[in-house]
Image (cartoon, rainbow, N blue to C red; front, side):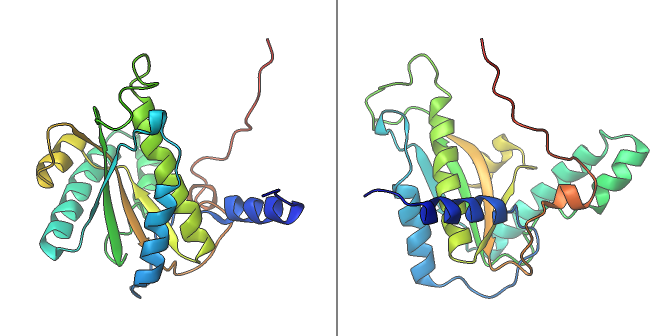
Length: 207
């Protein structure tokens, strides 16, 4: 299939309007859309076709509450690292969608999967985590195409998350995703609107 200029324009729109969503509606995500998000991960590239991503759909309210508590603990620690002025800005940021997001996924990476037979990862083992990141991004862009928002939570302790979910020893915590309908659409990142950090231009150095 030959891509057209319309495909390129649509992709640019998805990239522009793909935001790290923090404000969610509690409206449920349809089973059809959940299937499409899962299928998007199936299409992700991975080192040696290892497909190391391991996904837990978190529905249990008690388990969600434990994740929320862990976030609160880690967030307080993170805030304490900033000076008073920066800390004040930090505390004004809404850094989690845990309270309202109807769908939540705990993402792990298996560090030595049998799939792929070791191809391509002997010298750079982190390519497994990079593969999981690409699967997450496939889901993220697909969610935007379906008018859904995704928020990725990184203010969590990986070791505690692995213990909380009682994962196998070979699974490493990668990310926690909140998914649902965004309360509003915005092409401006939250950290730009809150004057936290502007974009720096991507430079390609020539040697």
